[in-house]
Image (tube, rainbow, N blue to C red; front, side, top):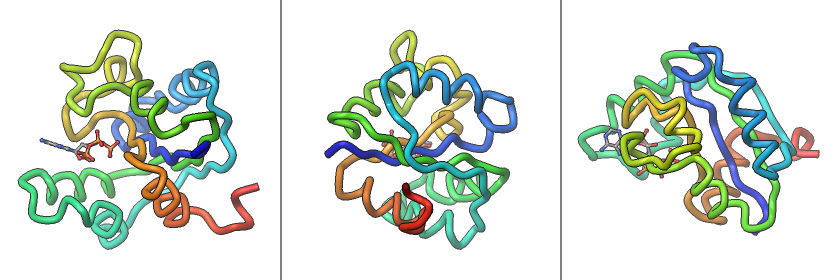
Length: 137
Ligand code: ATP
């Protein structure tokens, strides 16, 4: 697929990294096709991460993700999902490669700067979770 979905997570927003991260995204060849600065309620954060329900980090992840504003965006590029995941780096910032978004801006495993969809199917589900049809063009 040629689309993926991303969020800039609350700590990265709070630390004023929105501009730098969007610049990195564009320079890596991703085109922003939809974007909003918004906030997740506890209910919506829980729903977004429902696949992780029951895991030890789930409660903490949900409360973190609704602790402050986020930036949600749909990105377009050939091979978007896979390329974006290598661009952002490993979930654990200590394992993220030099030059990746998480290496630069993650402050912990949970507060790892950005989200990136893990499949074309989830990219579509996540994009629809945040954006109406009208907002996507
Ligand atoms: P994302 O889906 O956000 O791009 P990911 O695919 O790298 O991240 P997932 O395994 O889907 O990671 O986990 C979703 C999010 O949950 C991670 O981005 C991270 O914030 C948090 N998380 C995952 N594993 C852990 C963990 N072991 N400890 C703390 N937080 C975790």
